[in-house]
Image (tube, rainbow, N blue to C red; front, side, top):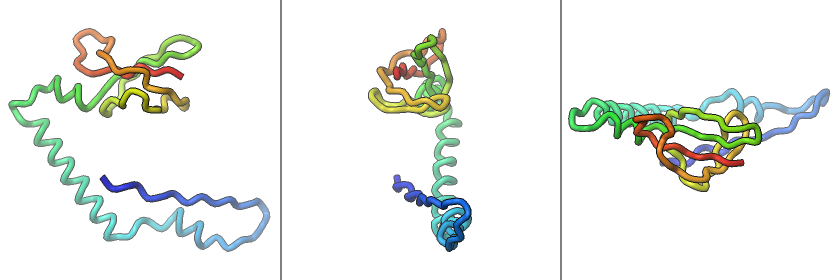
Length: 125
């Protein structure tokens, strides 16, 4: 998987006239057209693969759902929070963000919902 492009950072004090051409280029000029075409083709290829997997009669829909989504059980000072996430579960020890706060994945276990094949990431601060 290609590495994401670095993000440029600028500091512009108020009231000071500066040359902002580089800033405008970073904010408003899109990626090079050939890179956009390459990424668009890759997205279309991956979406076609996912559709083929989803439509294959021999693949268990519950197993597919378990692989592609997970739940979160977040331990906070105020109590516990629960969320459903449309992404594969993170690895134990990973740092994740939930509702603007950062948490550590303590462990991965079964979903607390009955008959839910998805895994659950247990988060602690």
